[in-house]
Length: 144
Ligand code: DQA
Image (cartoon, rainbow, N blue to C red; front, side, top):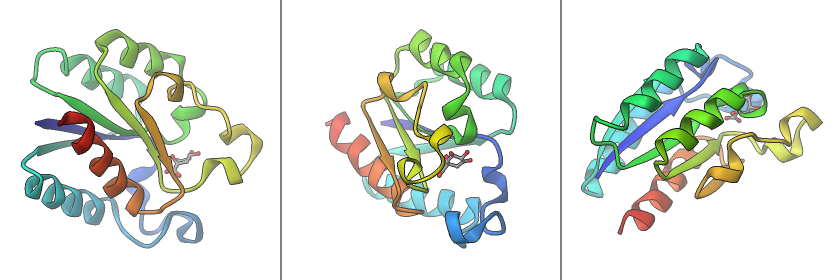
């Protein structure tokens, strides 16, 4: 299957950004590892990171015609703010998993709510880089 990985704002800074919370891996490390894992499962992984809400929304709209079967998304802070991102995901009605490096529920109150989670197949949070692999594994099983 074709799986689209979306990473939201500030995730381009992974590796140097608050490493005590988000770990030492860079986004490139994560994406190349996940691409390999997807390939081993027989899937192809596409990736976009953007710091811009509208760019993420445009990319979600493209999934209507680009053959995307499943979306993995770490929406970053847009998780907690973006009705627009939620509406985009609802609008294309593609199955998706929301994921986070950190356990958002163990952090500040404003990170406890997600606009996207009610529409997601499920949410993976708190396992660092491994959240991506675990979400991919869940996607693989849902796609079968
Ligand atoms: C995050 C959690 C969000 O609350 C935060 O705004 C991020 C990263 C995570 O992966 O843990 O940017 O999505």
